[in-house]
Length: 112
Image (cartoon, rainbow, N blue to C red; front, side, top):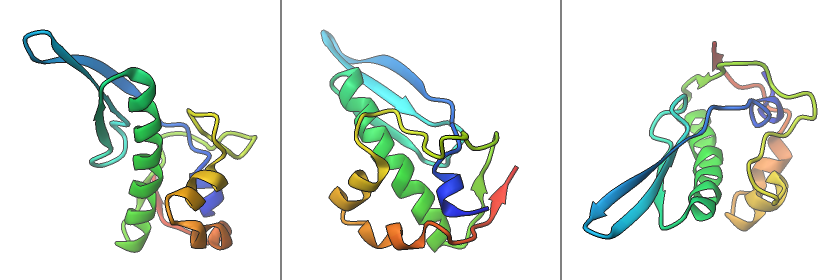
């Protein structure tokens, strides 16, 4: 499967409000289908933004580690799954991962 297709696979998002201490609550968000793809933030919007960054980094880490990427369902036809308004290409650039934009046609291992 091409890396661009992997980025288009929709993963289930899970979010919970967690009481860290009396009167202190946080949002914990994860993509349970991706290993160690969990973040915490003070509000849901920040949690989703951080989780999207973590999703991209997790996928790229799995590729670098030569591990198969989970593929629980088919990629979206519009070729981009993104829970935020920022395009994935812009996000990769902002995260210092722009070199991956030239590798979107890279064949990567997936496990269904």
